[in-house]
Amino acid sequence: MILIGPAGNIGENITGSLHNLKNYNLKCMEVEFVRSTWMNNSTAKQVGELAKMLKIKLSVHASYYINLNSDDKEKLNGSERRVLEACERGNYMGAENIVFHPGYYGKKSKEESYEFIKNNIIKLQKIIKGNKWKVKLCPETTGKINVFGSLDELINLIKETGCGICVDFAHLYARNQGKIDYKEVFNKLKVLKLKILHCHFSGIEYGDKGEKRHIEVDLNQFKELLKAIPKELDVVIINESPYLLEDALKMWRLVQRRL
Image 1: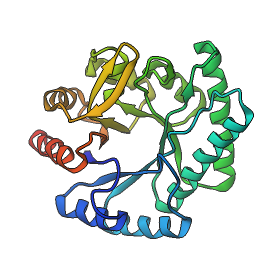
Image 2 (image 1 turned 45 degrees about the vertical axis):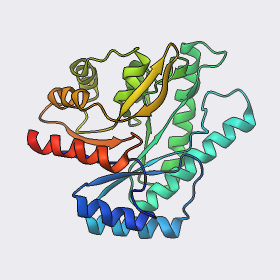
Image 3 (image 1 turned 90 degrees about the vertical axis):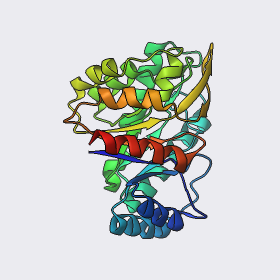
Image 4 (image 1 turned 60 degrees about the vertical axis):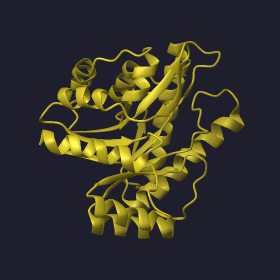
């Protein structure tokens, strides 16, 4: 099973977007809380009920303003609060995967950053469990070289914390200066024994420091990704290009040819 959908609304509001997705036969969507948690719990519940009725799988992208490696207590507390707000809405929405960028290396070494972020994720997981929220933290592979979130870092994080993962293939491409071996990525992921993989895809512009901006999907790159996906693995692919609907539909047509 491969599901394709957009990162955000493709209509005037989220209700219209979900109905539009159903009409286009797209079966997933990532709800974007990247600038603010703009939905209350009551609305989240209604959205979740509609998505369930329409058989659309939801996920959530938490705020961009998160740094679980910050030495500034106020910034760290704010980051934790924004993650938990996304988790709470996700729970009411029935969106299991809560995607976020974990943090920056800053003045810490990569090893120190890893331990700091790991401990903060464990702390957040205890709060999630205490609230009985049915969600999973999914740190995302990041596209900038000075930002925590390489594939190897996240694989180790999952092994040690039991959290989830979001593999952003465009970010990996930018982080590695335009180089990516999709088969190698899936071979590395085998150790996690995942039954379903949550991931992002788009085109990307990059420079010496990595990611600059997301651009139109490169369909040749997407074809290479499709070839590398193990037949036994279910995959949810969220389109993060500027052309949310158009590129999602292009990718979905290629997926249908593969089936």
